[in-house]
Image (cartoon, rainbow, N blue to C red; front, side):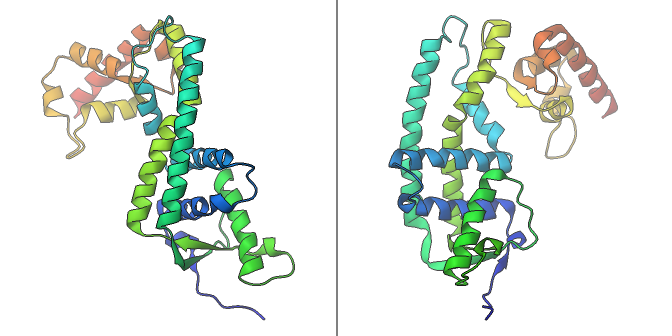
Amino acid sequence: MKHKIPATRFDALSKRDLLLKLTADRFSKLSNDLNFESDIKRYQATSITAIAYLKETNQYRRQLQLCLKNFAGRTAETFRPEFISAVKKLYQQHLINLGRSIIEFSEQRVNRKKFLDLDFSGAEINNAHFSGILENLFNEYGEGVLNLDHAPWRCRMARIYNCSKDTMNRLEGKLRTIGQFGCLDDAISFLEVRIGLHGKYTFKVLVDNLDELINDFLIDSSNGHINKVKAQKPVDELVKEAAGKYEVLNSPTYLVNPKAYKSILKHRIKSTLKNR
């Protein structure tokens, strides 16, 4: 006999809300998850989910930049292996504390009296981490809700604890904080290259390309016109300011050859000022 249970289509929710609800449900159950051999492993698991969430919602770079900012001014002499090792230990302990805190928060804030049934029929789950979480939920739904005694993994339904918008907002803030410390390995690799090239790390805003740089640096987002203050400055001053403020990620040539970077910046800034 088929069970007709009211369900919400996965795409009725925004990606952000869907992932936050899944995360809140996941964290609220971690304390009783026997797949983890210790509480420490449970706390560490929250960092993996936080990084996956931030990358999937395009927030990871922001947290990476916050992490990098703490290392501004580091030189080859001060960015030594013993310093890196000490920072890793410090951050790892802090992440354990953050993991414990976010699990406790989720346990307290999910509504255990109200379930949300989600229908993922036809959905393509490209994120490997959240795909794994969902596969477990599909199995649990088939076994516990539909009482299937065969092939529960064929089920594409998930039942989770629901949570409020306020809980989602606060949970997202906690995920961002975890991400700021959980991205340390990426930050260290990033810093090693810049310090190796220049002998010192100078914090800069990260942009994908020159178009993004120009839009952020010169254009007033409120009206799409050239920023009035920037429009009054000499081009050479704008070039110096932009070169000192931004790093373009898709062109390593600019890291190796600062003159080439300033040259293309001058061309793009002059062109933008002329054509607007």
